Length: 347
Ligand code: SAH
Image 1 (cartoon, rainbow, N blue to C red):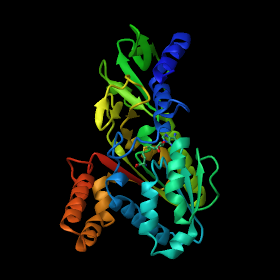
Image 2 (image 1 turned 180 degrees about the vertical axis):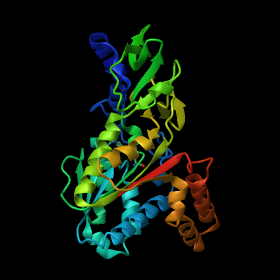
Image 3 (image 1 turned 30 degrees about the vertical axis):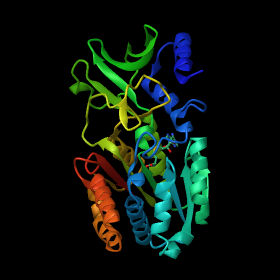
Image 4 (image 1 turned 135 degrees about the vertical axis):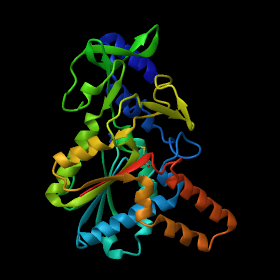
């Protein structure tokens, strides 16, 4: 059975499902979910993320982590948690880039938070040779009670969102149902939404769509609560927006092209833009003292990516020099990832 027929059967029995349930099933169903297959990433997969574009990305995150560790007074025990680590490339680059700070390495116990069993295997294969204290978990429930640094790249965009649409009868949840034999977006009954999550209801025009991600807020609250209790910081990079916004940002990508969200479910990556203001507020409400949102370009520049690019180019062939320049452009340029991607730092 395909995920599509599984979903249609469920909808026939129980009625339309929320966009959040649809997203969760499409990405994380234990048999048919998109992240159960092993090849979403890279040139031969469906999409390329920043760590997969260039080693410089992970190296810069490593610089940031080591400098925060120093600002914390170089604690002897530090937990480093990565959420949604994909193929493990970011962590691998971080560990290589910080090798020359042995006391930092020795302090580390690393926790990789990954729900997909098959991606856990890929990560284990990549990172076991690194000889660091590293373990895997599916959720944040069982972290050790010690100072902790959290990182995540393109993790929050994979967490489920609910969508609501303004109609003449009020705000209604947008659902996935079946029409003429095919999966289709349908409008649910009015009401039922949480006023706490939707702060811009009064500004909405008819047919406007708003998105909320209680799952993301919950994870950020868990992170900030841990930091408040045991000390630490977090860095979260993703495709997203800062100002309150309306509109449908649910998108699917397959083989580097946009794909209809409701077609061939489970074979394309599905994401939504991240509401950074909502994440920062969740961190603040849970007790984080600092929340700073900046662009990916500004963050990478601040930690010195341009110097790193120069150093890499010094002993490189012409071809390698061009590759470094091209990667720098993709990560930094405002028409590429530079400003569309944001970085949230909390402490
Ligand atoms: N950080 C990687 C991969 C991003 S893709 C990179 O930048 O290349 C999203 C990752 O988050 C995948 O590893 C996916 O399996 C994982 N993921 C998605 N939802 C999750 C959840 N609820 N809990 C833990 N991991 C999740």
